[in-house]
Image (cartoon, rainbow, N blue to C red):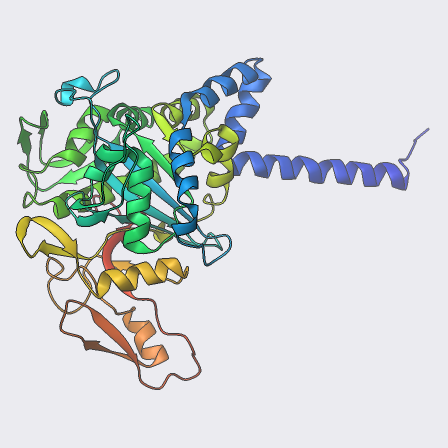
Length: 418
């Protein structure tokens, strides 16, 4: 005798199948989900979760300092948009860091990047801030509890004076952009991340032999391990023109290649490769309290997972040599102000390797859109004589918004060896 299932059973089976498909989709898209699911199945999930969770240090002191100055901080203008300040510390303290120089008991920000995530999570824009940029530092709480006086000094000294809170307040005063979260990582954390993905490939036009950076590499395609990668992104004298601008361009291209490597399926869908990445990403990491847990980080990463690599953009804030010291930088206006205004309003920003008109080395900011966009929407370009190209409307057939300004930079989709 054949027994047929009733409509309730069929609906239950259909519901169960749908639930399974949703669960599988979630696991494919979530790197944390893959790791936790597999490790839990092996009976080690909770212990591993606690280990990864414990790797992260909450920056409670910075949170308290920022709360003290809440009234003077910028207001977030667009709900859902996020601004995360990424700080690379040059501290020589800690395991594996002393080889890079004497531990003087102080640290500066070796690299600082303002990462803007669009409210619709269709784009991510990473803006490098030069460490030698001349800025106004606010009064800040020093590590010993005393307070500094406001000063006009190089940007990376803010971290030395008052840590991440002083750096955040300096960035907010400079840009009028609200910093929602911050992360601080040291040399060891960066190296471990690169090693965890089995290295990152770069292309070198000529060989490198830099004693200061402890770096020797042949010309051509090279896969850098963590130690080599750290030397590569920090070197100045032996690569390019020796400028900090060239060094930031190199860092941006490297980060784009690293993003591609981490997002590749052989990493995200392979738990044996994913766990070391998560361990490296959380070790040596100090964040604001809201991000200082796997759950907090996952909530942030979840919104970024569907951003296409061509919309993960890297650029340096428009800058030029400081008028009174060629070894220092100052913001290049009106380009820098335009960039900050776009990010503040969560408005589109476009990057291009070679913006039209003028040398890329001279113009940190351009203002054109793609040729096809220009012709389709009726725009033409006009120089304002200060390194910026404005896009003028000339009779669009129906469009009411101007094209996005274009800045010199690159995207994560660009092939480092292309």
